Structure formats: C-alpha cells, structure tokens
Length: 118
Length: 316
Image (cartoon, chains in turn orange, cyan):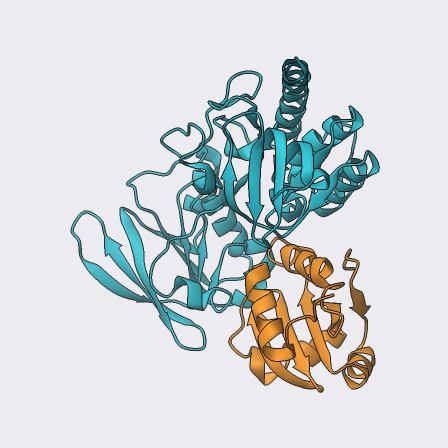
C-alpha cells in the first residue's frame, strides 16, 4: 500500500479510466522507498498548482501495474519509481528513479504547459 | 522587499527531524517560525523503511514519523515552504534576509540551519544519464531488477558491504570496487562479505566512467596504484560511498570544517551571531533521527533565549 495523498490507481481498468477522462496525467509507479517517496512528495506539493494535470500513483508490486511495467517506453528502466506522463492517453515522457522538483516541473511544462498564473 | 507578513522571528532551513523539532519547539513557544525546505519534508528520515529504535515508538516508517512531526509543527502555527531553494541570503546583523527561488523575500531575527546531508555520487561521465538504467543508490529499492545479473558495488564502508551481501539474494555475481587497500566497515560486515562466494573484490581502484545506451553495459575501472584502466562488463552498479553535508550554500557564510560540516558550540550556535545549526549537517560523530531531534531541541531553546535578549536590546 502506498501511504501518499495522491489518487491511487488500483487496477488496469482504473488506469484506463483515468487516462480516458484526463488529457494530462502523471503516474508515479513505485514503492514506499527512498527513491520513490521524494517523487510522491513533489507530486503532492505541485498538485494544486498544476490544475490541468491529474496526479496519481500506482504500487509497483501490484500485478495490475503491468500496464506501466510493460510499456515500451520503460524498457531499460532499472530503478523505481517509473514516472509516466500521459498526453491524451499516450505516453509523452517516462523517467526512471528519483527526480528533483526541477526535473518534474520541466517535463510538465514542456509536455503539458506551465500552470496559468492567478 | 520583505513585507510585514514576510518577517518571521525564526527561519529554519531544512525540514528533516532536526528542523521539524526546532519548528515544534519554537512555534509552541510562540516564536513565529518558517521552515524553508528544499526537498520533501522529513529529510533523510523519510527514506528509512522502518525505524525501530525511536524511543516511545515500537516501529514506524520514516515517512510516517516525518508526517507526524510535520503535523505537530503545523499544529503549533509553524509555517512550512517545501521544494523551494534559497537563491541569496544575508546572515549577518540582527535581521537576516532570504531571497527564494520563486522571487519572494523573507526576513528573520534568528536562523537554524538543518540542511542535512545526501548520498555522495561518483560524479564521473555517464553517471547522470544511466541513473535508474543500471546505476542505483538503493539496494532495497532496485535490487530485484538485477536478479541473476552480474553487478558492481562501489564503496568500503558498512553500507557498501552490508548492501552487497543483501544484493546476493538477487545478483549472480558481485564485484566490490573500493579505493583503499582496506575496508572502513565494521569487522562483522567485512567478514560476511568475504565469506560470501558470490562476492569478489577489486581494491585500490575506482570507477572513472559508465557506458551504455538504453541501460548500463560497462564501466571503466582505474587501478589507483598503477593508473591502468580496464573496461569491465556489468549489468548494474550500486554506489554506497557515504554522505556529504548540504552546506555548499553557506560555505562563505558560517564556519565549516574540512569536510564541509558546520562547526557548532554546545548550544548549537555557529560562528555567526543569531545563527544556529542542528542535525546531520553539523560536526558530530553519530547521525541518527534521535540525535537530530536532540540537536533541534537544543538549537530551538538556545536560539529562543537569544531572541528574547535581542528583542530587549532592540526595544532600548
């Protein structure tokens, strides 16, 4: 179980539903470990600012997370979390292992656009 | 410019156990306090899967303990700004000034630096690009990606040797690369590693480059005695070469020792009046959640007493 305040994706069906209902989605797929927790923390921190992005997590060891573990974009990944950025249901970007807030927001701004001010 | 609302009695730099403890004590004493935190609140503590030696709590994850401390600090009125960095600061004088990465400006009368530490990296070509693609700093996180693979572990301390032994659950072969001719780990850790048939050793050597396209394929290992460089095929590399204090941003502001740790007196005061420090970034031998909490308490109480005197002085 992931102890975060993010929306938890529990199943492949849940994953598909979120992608179909949201244009921009960021999913952090990991465990409650040292490399993953900081990325969940960043997502929680910026969730309110990036209102046009749906932030979610998914437990890496959940068998249903095959929807992320089997993506061609994560071939070669050998470090969790796998963080996937979806635009209109398609993978726009994927990263492996811990990321800084700067790295995350840079991807969000490039792929989904910067948050509007005010 | 700092406005009235941007002035705090105390600014705490860092939101690990030392900083959160200072935040709890100061806020509870009605000292208007702001914690500025560059990463996730909780510091290194949140990276610990299980804490079983924190008195009064049988077992808890570092993440949960960090969140409880954060809630406690907030409940007393402490303000916290996370994932923000300090662009400029002035620590001299009775009013300290901070310019943050978002352009906002804050001032305070006292400062407690609890910036903690981070894992040391090798800083060699290929390391950044192949992080998460064969290079890892966490055996419990990524060990299972290396099942039946041949890997390298870098380091010679307790973490390196203990994690190498734990990685033998997954990897078929482990080569430990260490820069010295002896290990700095405790004897029992050395013995465990030496008697493990999956582990071999390359001493007095260091990795000078990582190679790979989609994932790590090989490393250059340099023999530090002869200077010879050998390209070594490997599926993964785990790096455990210690921690460094996060003090680069104050290196010209307060006195640091040769390892970059902040020099403090018994009351956690630094070389600059009104500036205190606590936790993993200060000069000390033992770095534990409990010692960070103790340091944070002392820094809060001592700085609070200083603040009272300063306010009296400023009123005159």
